[in-house]
Length: 226
Image (cartoon, rainbow, N blue to C red; front, top):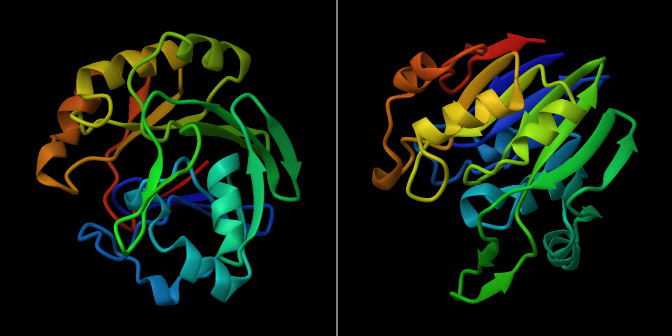
């Protein structure tokens, strides 16, 4: 399984012959190495409706005829835009041809702002677990710390976790380090930082706080094998 990071919360996972793109915020993301017009993917997974996570989903999904997996209301909204969507909700799991996706809770908000400044409610925010090739990846989405992360880690031993550390809108480094302890993840990668002034952080300081988990700072374009 090949996994790469592309700035903000953008993650690409290649497994079982499929490419999965998570929260493809590319246009307007100064930290990414991707160009929306060049991206090829089979599946897009969205954690919530904020514009810095939905990003270029519509353009990428239409061009690639990609399946978009998203929280129910967000999936419905994107379906109205002509996308092929699969709605899910927190606690639900679904087996796909590339692996199993299970949506988890996240404490945040979720809405999409249109070009004419209309705010569209897009349901509950979420994180998700991806189980494929005998491995489990956890992408927390945007969230604050919550104690049920202990249950997530107990029910699904996590090989790799992507945790937001930006503070202000999500967990900061200290809470994210505690989240890593709750989850008992083998390896942790910080995301959702440095993109905007309010979320500037030193990711190495976060990694240095971790106890019992390997921390890895990834810059845009970095890859790892799982």
